[in-house]
Image (cartoon, helix red, strand yellow):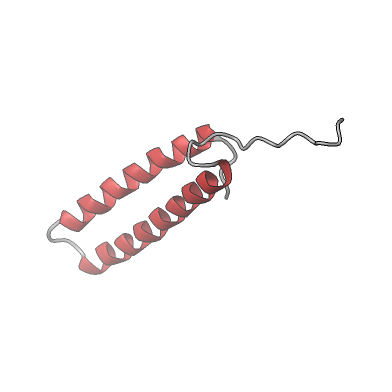
Length: 78
């Protein structure tokens, strides 16, 4: 998936923040099934990395300000 606009970037950052909090809570959790927790942590790590890459690609494409890049006018005219 690639982000198409600023609203998608904002929504993706919200999802990313929630996943990071979930990963931190899972890491702090004691007891339970260690193998299941390790698998969950690995899954979260992959999803977090994917969302970070999508945001970085969008920002690189649109500039740091998040604005849509402007196309330079054609010097030859319309």
